[in-house]
Image 1 (cartoon, protein in one colour):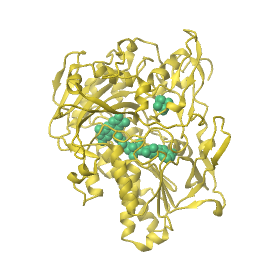
Image 2: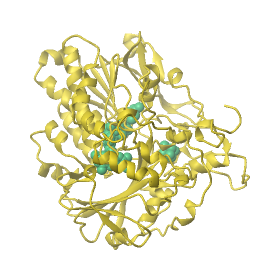
Image 3: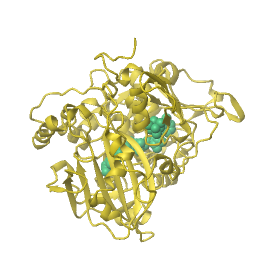
Image 4: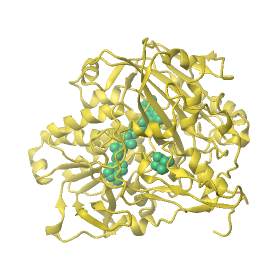
Length: 581
Ligand SMILES: Cc1cc2nc3c(=O)[nH]c(=O)nc-3n(C[C@H](O)[C@H](O)[C@H](O)COP(=O)(O)OP(=O)(O)OC[C@H]3O[C@@H](n4cnc5c(N)ncnc54)[C@H](O)[C@@H]3O)c2cc1C
Ligand code: SF4
């Protein structure tokens, strides 16, 4: 691309693409010799909600079919997870629709979920507010997708640990601290994945403890990598899975868990408005939540509080982390947090494009589940139950296909379309797009789309890529509160409490251009919730600046990939160790 301009003549991150060729770098052609590889039946990349639901469902089916179990070999089901333990890299709000988890484990009651420590109570009361400013609030009736009565407040991090225990008891082989770095394709078909090397230094040189990665050969590969999957991105390119779809778009959520003095009795959401700037030129859309969490094991009263920001904004100084700090100064939240203590923090991006942006769900030898497949209903802020459902449906489709001796998993696409996932996402198919016109123009259209379940104005509405949005350096940053270390915090002390354990001499896993116009550098600096990007103090006010990348702080939220960089997989075991998020 020439100069600093995007196609519209302004400074958009897309004009400065990261130096990455995913098909060349992240797709391996052919397997290593048989004696150098690990062979498993089904390999699942990602030990989050979706991947572990897939493992558990497959093992349930295999438990009743010893012949099939035998056909899948010594290791019928393997899960590859890059975090130190399953759950370590998982974060959600989270109010979950309970159905799919109840279907997956029909013998475990909701009371037992709470005793296991991943569920924190049924939603009995709820409230939704518009915030006109930093002092007042206006209560509105919840639109239908946002009704939460009867749902359960959970921690997906803790739920992944529960699902990991269930899967291990049923015979899954779970490789934690292991990143899958390449998709292995042979004769047009996925035949497994390669795990990443360990023990490389800053420049990629092998250190004393170097261990090379290994090919993991499988009869079926499930990509359950969550938002902005590394191999999912490579698979989408290799098999043209996004052809004819809208581009995927993203949101970034930053969350804290607080121990509070008084129990909160309801789930609360705020929509749009303060502290965001409403004029369309800022492109700022987002909202916040606060959910009660009663920890039945410790007896503690906790709350989950967070801010979700659409990554289609244009003011480079927009920061989801700082907006969360700001929202805590509103009396609505401050009253709940008073006398409390922050016990956890984390950040994660989520796919927001919905139905039209979902890629094709299968390719020869492999399929996509959960956030890897873009299965999130943004109007409801719900994805956990789709992850569980899609993992279970993938398991059933793989089992049925392998039993018939087939290696095509295309039937999974139809099953998803006919399930609650396809039905819900179809109803919300055009609710995301109008927001790309700004809140004032887009808001009423969104309400109409929700009210008519997508029928009005109907058709297929286009999305534009987040990195195509031209950026300017605005004044959003001027209203962020100064951290006081009690109620409001800076980015680095927040990263500290995630248990982030990336080696100081690890290779850099963030790909981006290191010299870019100030507008782009400021975008990265403010956007990153972990404070990874810095601009040297003596850099010029205008024109190109160097970007310093403190990649060891990265919490792998994935947001950088939406705004002009690329998160690739770090060494297995690196990154945060979330417990309660
Ligand atoms: C801020 C926020 C709030 C939300 N609130 C709600 C809510 O209230 N209710 C709701 O229902 N949904 C909510 N969602 C959506 C929901 O959290 C997700 O849809 C769901 O958790 C996705 O699960 P998943 O298993 O697909 O992905 P993930 O939970 O992201 O799991 C993916 C796993 O794969 C691992 N992985 C990725 N790549 C590799 C690799 N190459 N090698 C090895 N391991 C890999 C990761 O470490 C991770 O453990 C929210 C999401 C966010 C971000
Ligand atoms: S550097 Fe890491 S934490 Fe920061 S935006 Fe990128 S992926 Fe997120």
